[in-house]
Length: 193
Image 1 (tube, helix red, strand yellow):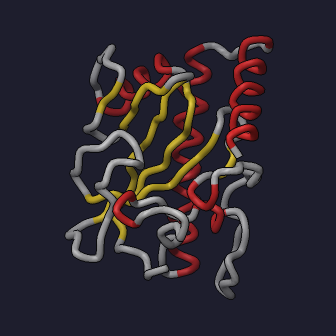
Image 2 (tube, one colour):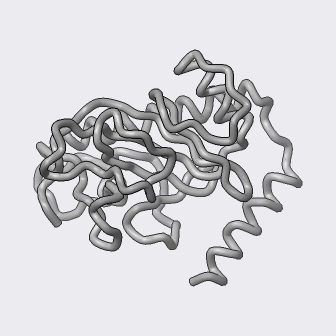
């Protein structure tokens, strides 16, 4: 599995280095649109099915990873009217990721409202005892400058920091780019696994 992940990351780096890149302004707009598209897809899934996708069965509930695969493939629900996202599930990372057409991967997180976090791996996932849960859409390996500009546009903050754990936009620098998340609406905790 590590070899497969290495091949995916290496291919992505080569692709980004040897292809024409859109301008930063175009990248910012595209990432913003994609984050909103994922949040809208989750909202439509919720309206059709009465709940968000469940917490993943392959991770700890305290992290709040939702099974994003349910947005592109019917998990066996009669009320499912998807696919809700035009993405493929070619990612090798289990239920918490699907491939992103431009960057590496896309995630859905359900975090305690107003909690400080920059990644899904923060133990701030929504619990049955949480007073409020906020949905977040995330995209992996966006250029840090793009994440910082989106933070400026949405949250009004000018920051050159490598991460930001507050506001509507959350981002954190990774080895080859950054993770960026946009917090959307509040939802109840989905039913158990």
